[in-house]
Image 1: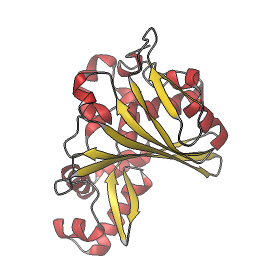
Image 2: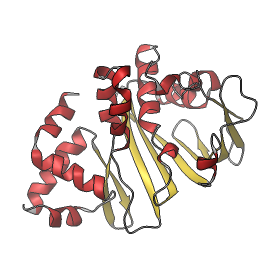
Image 3: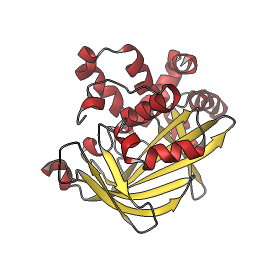
Image 4: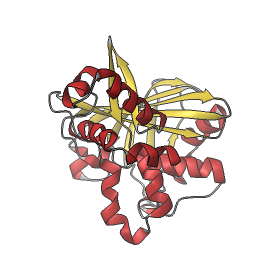
Length: 252
């Protein structure tokens, strides 16, 4: 977490995060035009933010886009913010803002977990393990391409989330359509897409989660829980313990 605090200590880097808060998925050229410094200077600050995993990049065509990653901030929250401060601190989980010029938007999250790809894949697809970090909701499926999946909370007969497994490539990639059913408000949002990508890095795994095909201004309940879910997943695999933040216990 030292890298996170170091990155946030500089006002220029905080300005870059503010710019991505206002409009996510920006190119280096766009960010350079918003700050009174050279292109090289902006690149140096972005590199620090990337090293702290506060910014994630994605190649789209010939362009390299920069996205704000809120997971490290969520980890700071889970370590030091008490459950009594949760209502105030929960805003940290939704620092990213919708794209201003696109009809759809996407949210990108990155986390490193000290585990193997096989164990991480198992944690994503095993209902009992999934329920321990996913608000108490287990996800069942036969995990083949084109198959259906459903997520149910304890004691509930109807699913609160459902979708189709579009790509199943264990233990590297899982792409799913996503339809939330837990309230009338989220049902109106229709279907979006969530991609889980696992890359082994030395003795750890980089997990990149992309939630896209969201309408501009979509209900934040669809994606706002990802930082807490990923924090819980990391805690479970690295320590064997469950997070006990209020959101984590929602359906437990």
